[in-house]
Amino acid sequence: MAILAILLVILSGFIHSIWNLFAKKSINKIVFLWYCQWAAVLLFLPLAWIDARTIESLPANGWLLMAASMILHGAYVLLLAKAYTIGDLSQVYPIMRGISPLVVPVIGVLILGENLKMLGWSGIVVILVGIFLGGSFKFKDHREFLSGPIILAFLVGIMITSYTVVDKVTLQYVPAITLNEATNVGNLLILTFMALKSKGLKREWLVNWKTIMLGGILAPGGYILFLKALEILPVSQLAPMREIGTVFGTLMGVFMLRESQGRSRIIASILITIGIVLLAQ
Image (cartoon, rainbow, N blue to C red; front, side, top):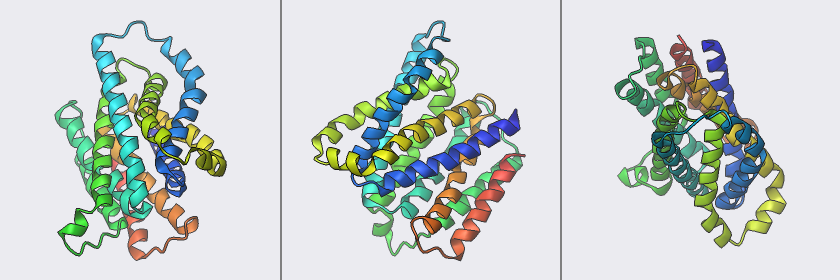
């Protein structure tokens, strides 16, 4: 079962990098993600309905946790849209994905009572080094470090960390597909005002309707795989492992976006892979 969980997480990371590539290439990030939420809610509604029928009764704690998850996911998708509007994929993606491996295992061990071996902690360190090396950060002064894209990327990372931990606990009350559908609804509600206020609804759909539909399947589908893995193994072990998406993102930047990549990006990918192997022990 452990191998199955690891495979689910790796696939989830790959899928995550794909739909983030779609979001970065879109015209209006808010509108694109809003359309994706509509697609996700409608496409997964039948499965969520079947999944929800397995819930015998949902206590107050379950409702509160699900509401918290919806709010955190909504804040995440809003910040993500803003980060991709003003920042490069290769700049913000490693940062936003790098916060979670640092914080989630600590929370998992200190708050959720999970255990992580020394090899696991070593893997987290190696993954973090690889992620930040892959970001190719060249800060001239503190003002560059505190620039808009960097701050937004950190905030996105905090949201990822927060909803990952909350969702791990929420799975005790709500099955994965139902929880994912609830968060899609939360995303939709938070994005609606800004999307409708925008004048780019028609253009975004005409240009990117194919990737919108794919994003509507891949974004929730990939996260459902991660939630299923969380039902098998501890969050402190799986959350950092999901950051293999940074490796896939680097390869997509090289071969699809034609981004210039140096030796540091190759080394970063190797380090991340080594870290994942250490976490899997």
